[in-house]
Structure formats: structure tokens, C-alpha cells
Image 1 (spheres, rainbow, N blue to C red):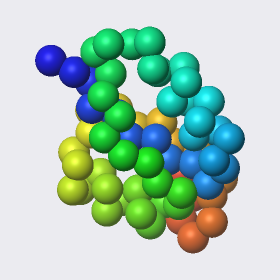
Image 2: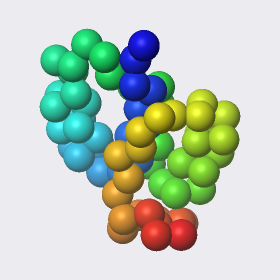
Image 3: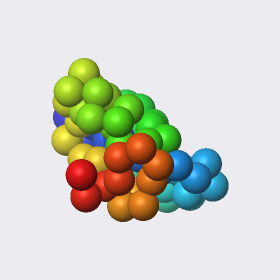
Length: 65
């Protein structure tokens, strides 16, 4: 069983770093990426990840909202 993971960050370099960090982990499946909080809320509802890597400073809706 894999850990379904969503990555949320408005900076592509930060998302790439998280993906590179997770790549060797066979039990982690990246189910999506988002660049803002509004898209993250929709992706969480749709994809139902087990784990979310969430930036707290983003446009539109931040990680605290």
C-alpha cells in the first residue's frame, strides 16, 4: 500500500526538491501538485491524499487558510 502524497507550493523549485526527496521512497506515490491553496483544496477533495506537503505562504489562499 502506497502513501498517496500531494505537493503544494507556488515555487516550482520547491516542488521539485520535495519530489526529488521522495523519489527513492517506493511506498510514496505523488498523486498531484498544486501552485496555490485554492487548487490544493480542490485536489485534496478529489484525490484524497494521505499526506500533503503544504507551503504556508502562497497566493490566493495560503497554507493556514
